[in-house]
Length: 122
Length: 112
Image (cartoon, rainbow over all chains, first blue to last red; front, side):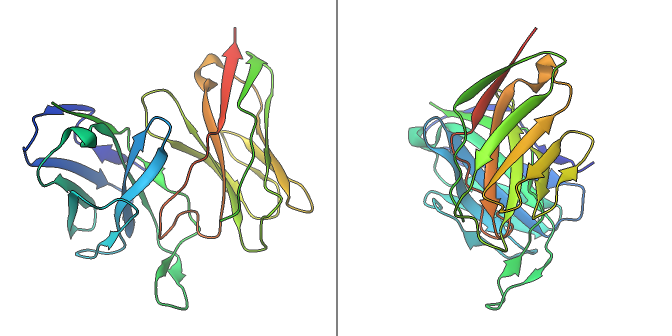
């Protein structure tokens, strides 16, 4: 079974702190994703990565950065935490199947999620 | 990605089959149907996906109509632990390179 592990289930931080959320997958997946999930807003993509040291902005990258130094690990960084970043953060991964005409990665394989980190910024 | 329509909520008795419908009338030929579920306070869990043919795995069965405009997820013997929000997604790439979008889903409640 695919295992995506997020470092913390619950985290409380203060405004202005630098926050690191870690995610590790054990299936040698090329693609990894960071989402946030908020009531009424659904799932929103923050960043994704399709290879080591590669990253692409999702729909809401402002205030966040990411790091992928190893294939199995994808970190989300809140540079200076703010109260509007209080949310459930979800990491996911899937395997790449090929490339599209524009050389973007393509996968029709399902994404597998971690259990999430519920982050509160006070 | 094509839009999907699901009922807001459904009840099912424990031990019975739960049949969750999904309409996706604008689906295009290369789009897959994916099902996920999310139990309260946990991350989404992948259930099953398919393109044209019906699919079955250890968790569920997926029935896709011949015109592919709708599908049904079947949990054959529902248990209390199957109470969750179920999401039907239609996508060319499964969010494979650009993220998933969940709609509101169906809140399935399994009654003892």
